[in-house]
Length: 206
Image (tube, rainbow, N blue to C red; front, side):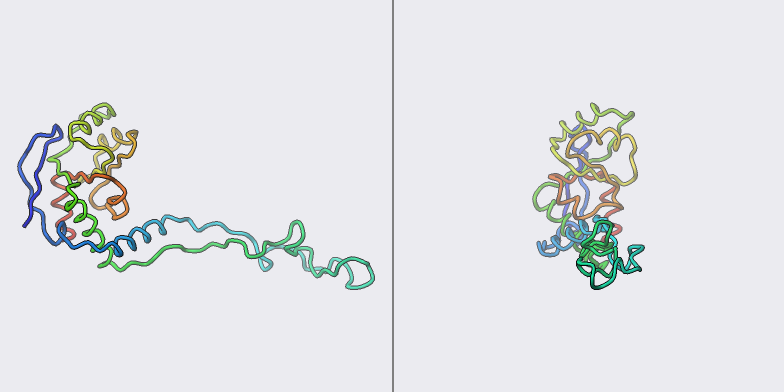
């Protein structure tokens, strides 16, 4: 069993928390983390760009002019891609960019991301965040005391005062433990979790 020190939001020691080795001390495979990041970014692509091809554009059923004798190039439809108002050739169509990841692979990649932060001494556990009101200045003071730069803050439950106080601070993001993902963990420099979030995350992944 490994442990991590617990601090208050004023950066005072408040004990230790036990960490499960099968969650925070997993051997990291970069190729698996890369696959998880690719799957996350691909799922955020809309894939809704679309144009009309010959089959879907209306009109053009009548031959514009006879085949021979007019001196003009032969034409079979007024909706040719060569004409104004015509169809588009080889244009983008609606598609799904998502990459399927098995549930076990997703869980393992999440454990590897957590383990990489713990191994790199970039995991910090805070007893709890207590902001009585929505105020950016109060959050910046806490950030300064804890020595944080661009952290991902993970809470056990949704904390409205913390989220709204931190949303205007560049590089800071606040999420709940049930919505944490590999991409966000690796994107941010530090990973900060409250003690209850660590316990709930270990129950879910352990």
